[in-house]
Amino acid sequence: MLRLGFPVIGVQDIPRATAFWTSALDLVESAEWASENWRTLEHADGSGRALGLMRSESPAEALPRIHLDLLVDTAAEQRAEVRRLIGLGARDPGWDRYPPKPDFVVLADPDGNLFCVVDLSNAPSG
Image (cartoon, rainbow, N blue to C red):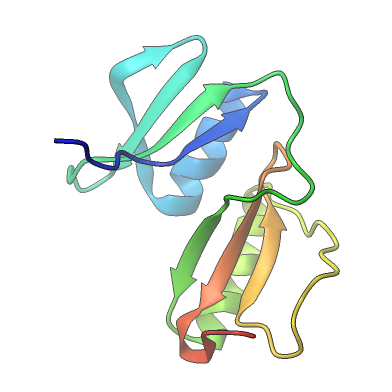
């Protein structure tokens, strides 16, 4: 039976990406399937795989068709998480496509891959 696995992010610097995403999402590096060009990150509570990091020579896309949404429950939590993620190495990519009342903040990871921090109390934005 076919089943959905987990998202994979292409990165140019595996150790840097591993440090960022394990800290950002409270994940741990798994010894399973680890290589010079791959890391599997798991939930710290042991509940399974969460994210794959694959070495990529291509740059991050400016307008990716697929991206990660990281969820929070309140606007205050969203502001706090955005500050924390920037402290870990994320950056504001200067996103200029926000709707009038967005429920999300667009950030870029240290490799430039875009992701969103979504405030579920304000979702969905139009």
